[in-house]
Length: 196
Image (cartoon, rainbow, N blue to C red; front, side, top):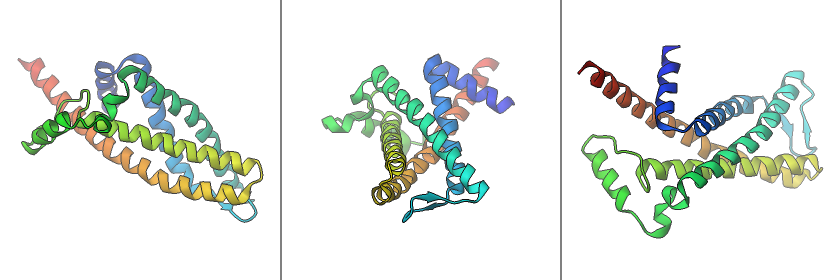
């Protein structure tokens, strides 16, 4: 419980209430999707889900959580882009590498760079938002094509979705690890500041 309080305190200090809640919901739903993806048994040629009760329920759990994640995930992307602007996350599209270079120098000196416009943290977050959009779009395409009876095209979208899911999983691990590192540094700094 103490660990959860520390995380929530960090989020409270660094994110507005709406972003904090939606960010946490996206994280929880993505983790649920990663776990439930192992319960899908789908025959691409017939477009049928396995008749096994566990796999049938697991598949529909994945689809249901996926639909909720489409709504909440796209809302999160819109909120973040509206909050910061597109260039905040993707400065390199404008040929702006100044903050990225400064952040890499900071990392090279074994210090964590601060998050800000065009920073390494913002750029990595932008890549994660992109991976989320691609994964959600391909998953939704797969589901809609499957429901419409287009088994061949649904299979192609399923393969695309599975490949893009790897990007999102890598992002969750990388972003989560760096986030934990930031929380540890923040907590230690906060604790040492309280002792002074």
